[in-house]
Length: 189
Image (cartoon, rainbow, N blue to C red):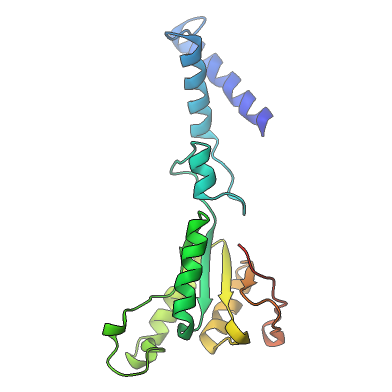
C-alpha cells in the first residue's frame, strides 16, 4: 500500500510541476508535502475491512465520505429488543455502523404483548422485507440467538444473508442450526 501511495504522490508532484512550472513550490516544503498527502488521501481511500472503525478513521485523520467502517446488521427475535439495544450500543462504541430492527417505546403498545408488533398491525411482510434490505446494505450479520432461540423471521434473514454471501455471526455460537446449514461463529464483530 505504501508503494501505491508513493507512486500516486510522485504523479501528483509531476502534474503540479507541469501546471505551475518547474519545480512546483508553494510557500514552504512542508506545505507542499501536506498538499500532496491530502491529495493522495483524497484519491486513495482506506479499504473497508473488519478492522476499520470510526475510531480508527478519527485517529488517522481520515474521515471522508469515501471511507466507512464495517456495517453490521443485527437479527433476532423482537423479544430480545433490550439485548439488541445493548448490542447495538456496544458495536457503535467500537466504531461500527449498526442496523437493527425498530425499537418502540412501551407507550406505543396497546396490549400486554410487546413482541410481534408487525403481526399485530398487519405489516409483518413489509417489515421483514425492509430488514432484508438492511442485510443487503450490511457487511456482516450478527444474530442474537439468546438461549438458542431463532424464530421464523430470523431464520429467513439468516438464509437471505447466506444466499447473498454475507458473513453470519452469532451471539451464542454454541448452538447448532443444521436446518440453516449454519455452524455458528461467535461473538465479536
